[in-house]
Image (cartoon, rainbow, N blue to C red; front, side):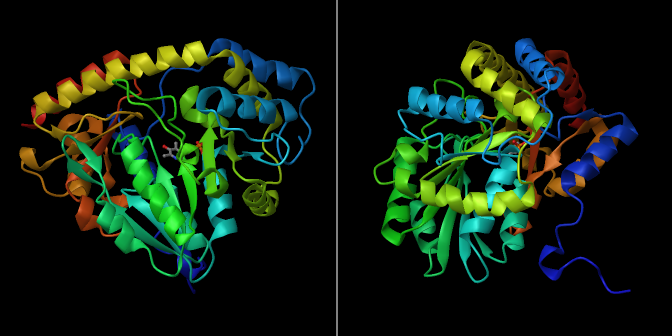
Length: 387
Ligand SMILES: *Cc1c(COP(=O)(O)O)cnc(C)c1O
């Protein structure tokens, strides 16, 4: 039989998360691989979803999203970042950030086009770019001064006449980098000079540490008119299963995203949207508690990984630590990740799968710290046996 999968999607078989989570289930190891919290979101927000279901909000919502959620998103952008978006035409609700990114890439890049992204990339980027028939041009993030960053000259060199888009994820999964204004200014200058559109993945916008400030790229000069920003409730409110997000941007670009999104899923689940509007308006104090608790969990895991012998660059945001395995005598993250459940009873994700050339990230594995303190402590305790 011929291979049924279209050629451009071969090589994107089963995600590493599925393999590692199955390994965790089979071995009973602690799963610090996949990034989902093991505690629930704000109770009143969960109640708002229940109330929406019991109150009859169960038929198709409007394609662009419930007006109350679009208004809440516009208010959040204005109050937090000073960005003005018209809830009718410049805000569009999507099935999580994943669909927002996919619809934006599919709408704005096609066969023969190139898309720049900072590597390691979130795992959906490469597949989505392939789905669009475009080519991914990676720019590496490397450790420098205790955090991962890029070389502006490499960013400029990645631009070709075919470049259409740049994907910017900050706070960055898995490196934990929160791009500074200076880094964003480099990216903005490249976008302006080459007339590129930026698609920004801001799902960790609230989850930053040590006073690091999340600055939306759209707030930089000349960028609002060329930035499609993507956010979602999953990480901000610890409801990763809700798959409810939104894009904001200039009307022309949002209309382009709409053209694709309406034929992927048409609309996004109504009860979640109702609850998301509640979250954005009423639960930001809860989010601040989550942020502070994640900062402590970050310290707990980073300290433990250092004690276990890994080299770790302290993340400034997100749920994740990218750990260098070479001090422990390992060179290949996939080998270590496959052996780790047996050796130590812990599951991690080898981040080389997030690179075009696996060799660039062979020596890193990613651990998640969005877990209960006792789970982190037990994992750390087990990892110290690796030495
Ligand atoms: C979790 C995550 C997403 C996906 O968000 P959903 O709203 O669940 O689709 C997108 N980008 C990054 C960087 C993530 O970590």
